[in-house]
Image (cartoon, rainbow, N blue to C red; front, side, top):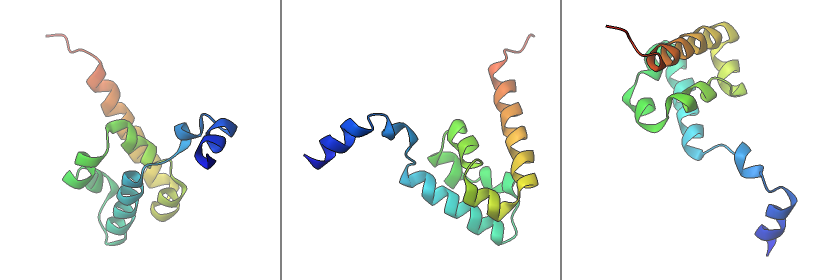
Length: 95
């Protein structure tokens, strides 16, 4: 009954929840960066690639704890590169 009442109070709350998988990947990214690895290199790891979609990887770069640990500039540069790669992949190539 408690769950039903909380669902009725905020029916769209599920849209804003983060998955525990994203939490674990964020912790992994922060830990690996602390070990001296570059963000692009970490995002290319199979661990990250197998667990997050390209959209989730972009969303990962919006997390405050990731931005704080890695720095605004690093995150912005990587976000820009990921968005460009996504845009390039969606444009059909003329041959």
